[in-house]
Amino acid sequence: MQEKPYNKQASPGGKPFLSILIHAASAILDFIYPSVCLLCAQRTEGGTQVCPACWDDLTAGMFIRRQHHRKDFAHLCGPPAFDEAMICMPYHEDIETLIHFLKYSRGKRLGLRLGAAMGQIFKRVAPGSDALLVPVPLHRARQRERGFNQSEILCRGMAECVRMSMLQGVLIRTKNTRTQTKLSAESRLANVRDAFMVKYPEKIHGKTIVLVDDVITTGGTVHQCAGVLRQAGATKIIALALARPQPDQAYERPYFP
Image (cartoon, rainbow, N blue to C red; front, side, top):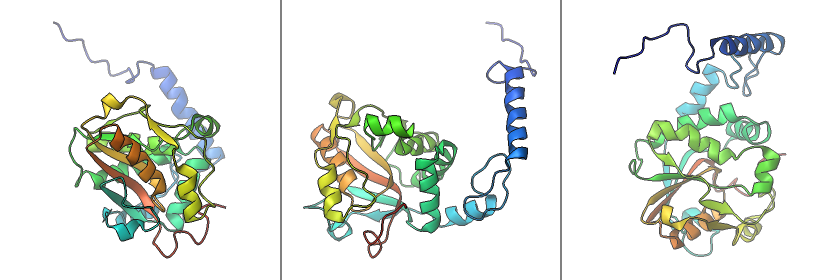
């Protein structure tokens, strides 16, 4: 078969004029409404939400923290249904700001970037390319209201970096639970009890599952998710979160105003 000549004029999508218009519009908007860093308020280029200096400071504190002992999840009734939890960073003011922007300001671009950063450190301990990334699901009503699932966006950012497939629509949330942000530890556990189910168990039977969420607090949500995944035949479940509060600050205040 004769190879087609490479057209230097064409964009990857085959629509060079549209691509030029998009870049021009982006440049005009950036000039009129300059982007500023969410963390230091300095101007950033190209609509980036975090400047290079702040991003370097943030990612310098990222490394995998393994938690699998009973004392790590003392608020659960019995041992966790997952094999272990892996936390990428402690929960602090800067990461609170970024997660708030991701969830409530449609920060998909930031979420993909955070997911890629998670993937960079997780790939050093990843269980293998045959494992599956599964985002903690939102109820369809909540996802319709927000426009997307932040855990799914983190998964998408991770997927290419760790070369693992993301499995959507298998783990679903059947109850539109209250937001967890202002609940006590006991109320959190009750809130998510029996809130999840596996729709296509054959897709996860015999598989290692990496269950991805933005924040783990008591561990109640990932515990409930892992329980139904285990019942459906998953052989190993790793709960992976971007951040988790230290035990002494986990339940003293809500995450978001």
